[in-house]
Image (cartoon, rainbow, N blue to C red):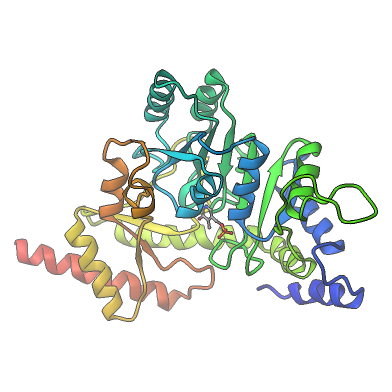
Length: 369
Ligand SMILES: *Cc1c(COP(=O)(O)O)cnc(C)c1O
């Protein structure tokens, strides 16, 4: 937290708007919309998962439909497809962004159409803050007339050709969960260029109440709106978003500068036109064994690190879903590790991480010599 969050929370208390309606929500939505792109409409919700769920509902996804989804991502990208009784079709990643491969995605779309069912939506993810191939994915989506849900949960502040992520999809979503680059403790938002869609999202997220003086409902609704108190936290966090991006990018650069001299450690570079908020600093080691050795050694030094997201096509809950896989995400998963990346990491913390990793690799080199 940066300091002004409590002032905005106090405003909510002072004017007694302790509900999923009020001034903080409006102002948070406006400031987020301005940040993403002039002219977008933001609906603040109580999670990123809720935003994906509403996006799918608004696109008319229902039981038996198929939805293309990047396999290398957090389960929350795909779970809402199942809430609706639809089927996720998992597509593998490409190695230069770790995101959905345009080649495999088009192959998947063609094959599903041949089997008699055109996918109804595409969920593409900017993983760890790295933008997916925005233009290539858009071109294919348009060629087949399939809308894109842009999962920007990890990518607030990332850009492609200087344009903010969450402005490229037919619908975009962000998350303000506690682990994300800015947080409202729990929260998310749906982003659209269409005011009617925003109105629909507000209606669905507040129990889909008909316009009547009594409580009447003609559609199933949800309790997904963000509270005015949490939106106060969001307003304060927006003031430090650019600092957070700078801090995360510095952490990544610092790890990279100190570790890239080792031939068995790689970093994901930004392809041309891609700017990542570097939400998490990840490394790719030369083997699963080295990855585990580093992870366990960090753990022995009381430093938490984590393997990357386990691809969804390997998850017990999704194992029976159709997939279009070439091994890229499994390889990245086996060799990848997320290093400590919190914006408040101190110099000494980073030095400890770097020294544990350096000493493992130097020891290995000695053994080989
Ligand atoms: C965190 C996350 C979500 C879900 O957001 P919540 O606010 O936690 O519900 C969705 N997709 C990705 C890629 C995420 O990292």
